Structure formats: C-alpha cells, structure tokens
Length: 214
Image 1 (tube, helix red, strand yellow):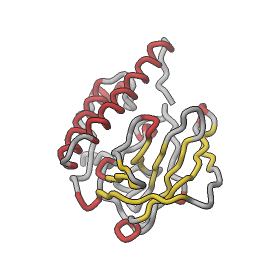
Image 2 (cartoon, rainbow, N blue to C red):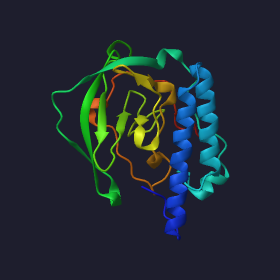
Image 3 (cartoon, rainbow, N blue to C red):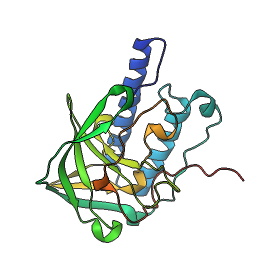
C-alpha cells in the first residue's frame, strides 16, 4: 500500500520511481558473477533508498536517524539454485491487505531441493490481478525473534525482486531476504507468508531486526 501524500500525482510518481529503481537494482544483480559482491551492492542501494527516497517504508522521524538496515553476515550456504515443479493443489489463498482489500495468491509451483538444508520446500505463488507476478514469502525459526514475526520476502516480481534462473530452475539466495514494509510502520499492510511456507529451521541470512541499544 502506497504512502499517503497530499498530492496523489506526486505520490504515484514516487512509487513508480521506487519500483523502477528496485527493478534496475535486481537487473544489475543478475548480471554480477560474484554473489557476495552482488549482496554488498544490494544492501548499499537499499540503505540509500530507505534513507533518501520519498517512498521509503520508514516514517519521517525514523528516517532522520536511520543509518543502515541490519543484516546477518553473508553466508554462501544459504544460496541455492533449485528446480521448481508444478502443483496439483492450486486452491487460491486469500490474504488480507488492509484498506487495499484482499490479495489472492495462486500457488503454482514448489521448490525441489531445499528440504535437507531448510527442513522443507517452499511454494511459489502468483499474485492474482492485472499483470500478476511471482511472490515467495516465508517464515522460519527466526521469525518473531531476530526477524519479523510475519516473515520475510525473497521474490516479488511485481516490484522487480528476482535473482534469476532458467530451464525450470530459480536462484533463491536467502542472503537477499528482506522484511515487508509493514515491519517498519503501521502505515503499511503487507501479505504475510501462508502456512505452506513456514520453515522449521532458522534461516540466519538476509535482513534481521535492529538490536535495541542496551
């Protein structure tokens, strides 16, 4: 859900620019051969967007004191290139989206190759509606502790968040997992991970919650 703005044209233009910058960022990442170097670029440009962009998820007061997002150290063991296979059960999953109504997620595929490392496989969803897009939210054993209780996102192609793949495979690098906007402000409402994507093991990679100063 977009940030409220007294000028709707300016608000939509800012959202348009935010999505363009995110899509350009991921396009750059897909062209980089070194995943850890790509991760450094990703975190630096996200920090810049959060600090400076008018569509930052942060409230203005929090933005003024913002320095950087908190992330786990890069861990290559959480990078996978896995096969995806079709699903027989494609029952729609309705998800509340606040003032925006209801978002419908259509399960269409499942990963094959994560169970040994993460304790389970993940479902890929298609976001219903004009244009649609692939969406991969998840929860894990860190959710509600070092990460947001509602889970994190890994793929959201409507916003350009896509690390690539091909020939029936997809790159899932959990070092690039990020929190939904509702983590940062009650102004935002975000679809959360359906129970099919609740992993039993901790994913100690990607974005984590800020540690409060003692």
